[in-house]
Image (cartoon, rainbow, N blue to C red; front, side, top):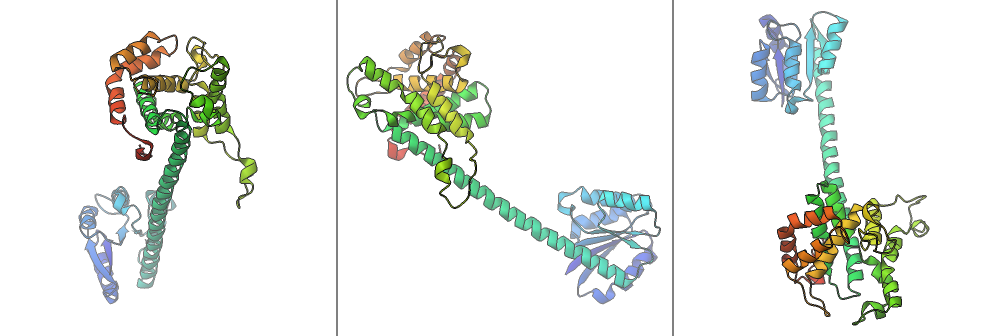
Length: 371
């Protein structure tokens, strides 16, 4: 049963409405108020499905009541019919701007009242259905977006793991590098989007090793100059892999793709892969960049990568202590590493060590792809 509230300061008008709606008592549960304040109390108590209010009343007017109603989120779309005894255009415009649903002229007959109220409530029901469907759609879109985001993370991290599996590193190394990079970015004041992106992108810093010979990657002893030069190519190979356009492949899919939008995360990953072995003093590789020529993302991942390597055991070396590893990093500040990033490492050293200890023994199968 629909709840209808009638508001008018004239008792005879309210009595007229009582008589008028008597025949609809099986459809409508009607309430009556003689002022805006009384109406407002009833509105919050009974939560009507529609309101019919006089425009001109002593104290608070119909427009005042309308403003109170529209000011509450729960009543924003509640049908509100304004009852007026004149045809003043400006007054009607003011009512519409305040959110009135429709008008009724005094005196009004039952047919007009019933028709306008029924139409207003039917429109409200339709609007409610649309809003409900939109909410359901938004939930589904969010769920699908999260699903796609997780799939994207899995592809990225599994590609990174594939590269790490080809030498003595483990999947835990790329996770630690990602977490340390994110922590350093936070300390340096970068926003949450940057932190999340550098976490994911940093895991692919060595993806170019996929293109390096196993003979070189798995060699137990020192590399020859030629082998070292070949090993250093992994930076450029990684960037090429991550920047490769797939337009020629995607044209064989069902959907037509004239031009693919280049993924910004892949571009960031490529930038890191290319520059994480550059040195602040310009003696790094592959391009001998120096100082601010090196993207800050490359500087951050370089520090995270080297520090984790110093703190990790390998078949050919033991892990250094936190104190010795930090001393080496600080010694190379301004030479190998950005001073700004090293300062961030010093300030968050305890948390960096917590990351290393937490994920020290993790093998590839245990790698949490949603970290």
